[in-house]
Length: 155
Image (cartoon, rainbow, N blue to C red; front, side):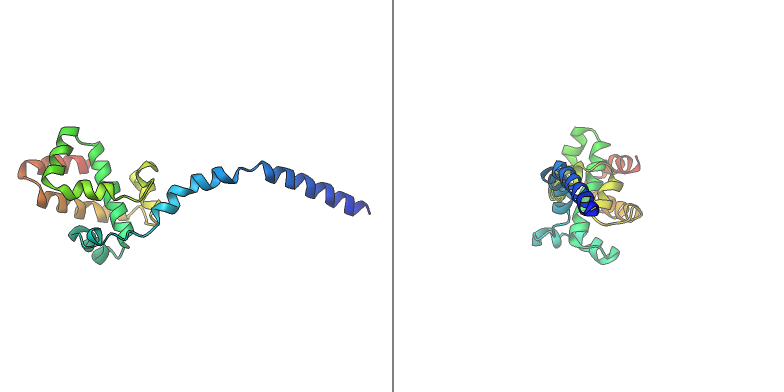
């Protein structure tokens, strides 16, 4: 009888503590990660030459290619003057499109390394993505933008 009472008390205490856990907050915190892993279905993005190159060359999914590209462009944007980034998006409109296509919540998860991690990619993939993204942007931009982009990517 004592063991039944002791077990009941322990179970009651455990249930009281479990009800203090806020499941809604936990689900809300996990939402950006869950949304970040939702596959990209926009055929225009999947057929973008850069995204096609990344998926073929690096063996990543279209979602990883778009998300990784957005993370790298966002990082370069932070290293550029706003007027230079505006000029870049006029010269290479797809830069803005790819940035806007980032999986929901991805770009607010911290560093590029953490963003790649959320996408399920190793941090080493950043070094594989960066030159391909830079090459793509430079190919569409005016020669005067080359140095600005190279400097933004080097930081």
